[in-house]
Image (tube, rainbow, N blue to C red; front, top):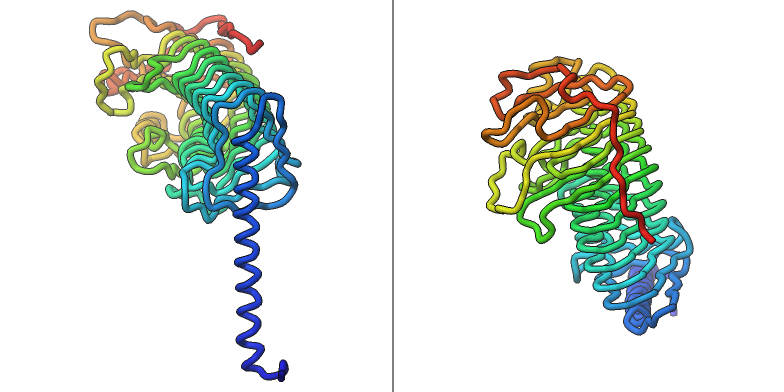
Length: 402
């Protein structure tokens, strides 16, 4: 056989590489089946070890109705689960109805939907997990990186999230929540706590997101309200990224340049944070009405109540706020490049009056300039007077994880 024939080489080489491709694809599919089988057969006390390497999967992995199970990688950057070519399932990894499960030391990349979703779990831990979308920020990226929802007892520690089109680190409708020493970068919302109670965000960094750290209460959800939430000792800097949330998402209304934001909710303390170079609002306290969206939930309270902003450090160069969003445009119209760091929309229920009926507490902040926007009265009586809101600064008490 004349192997020097150019026609022979042209035909043989593509066949050779195509064979390698199919062998690799089959090997990856075999790994997925083996890992899924381990998750199905796992018993209490088991640790599922994920080896170092980059693994490409076409469908979701899931762990259902397990107790006392650990899924352990070889390191945040050593074990990488890529779902770039995912064709089946929305999430990369799904955890459902589990108790005392630990996920540690691996990455999930480019899931078609959420990277890791945990629902109806009790005492679930995410430790040294990295979720990301590797391309440019896009509406086509998955909504959430870490996404525990309807859980009792959540610990997120030492994790990292990048590129989510909603929130990098999101905890929703859950109790006993701690998000510690984690990094959220280049997401729409860096870290979001939504309709949760007894939650803490501490020692985290939110940088280059649209909004840094958000505490939201939204209507028409099974859990109607959140309370007792403390956001403290975090670094929230340069969250000026364009908003790339899909049309219709509530976070799509967050203006670029938002550091901290509280939307509705009660008993929220924002204290001892360093908030720097967020061009629109270092800290915004708003009611759901600022979104302009209707709702029909008779049990929902749309107003922020007992919100404390104290002992934070705010800094910002003189910058133009995000003019494409109402708050940013209004801030520029009223304040130019000198927008106060703390903005409160001032919206109150009909018939409610008084200097501060919802107990908004502004404590001793460094550079803590303030404005009440009078948004419920078409912004007619915007006021920088802080006296009705000045206080010593209270810190909410939290129920700790056992």
